[in-house]
Length: 113
Image (cartoon, rainbow, N blue to C red):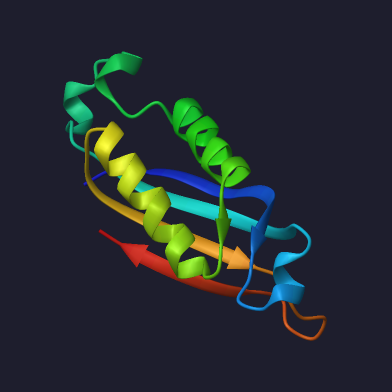
């Protein structure tokens, strides 16, 4: 099995449960583990036969720019549903990290579909 990994797409988004959190954009990162539908020996050095990670990155950034979310769990689900509906993949893992505390490196949520 093979996979495409996109680590830490960085963005500032409106995310948070409290009104205070939602007043300003917060720094988050999105990491993806994409397991393409095509087998590695079927790709034949052709971009159209695999998942175009450049397009995936742009799609994720657009979703982040447009949305506002209470939970990072909801954000991960919306990203996953969009990508699975648009690209040929067997499996997808989406990890969303948020950096809300000074004494903690990050808080994250991973969704595997």
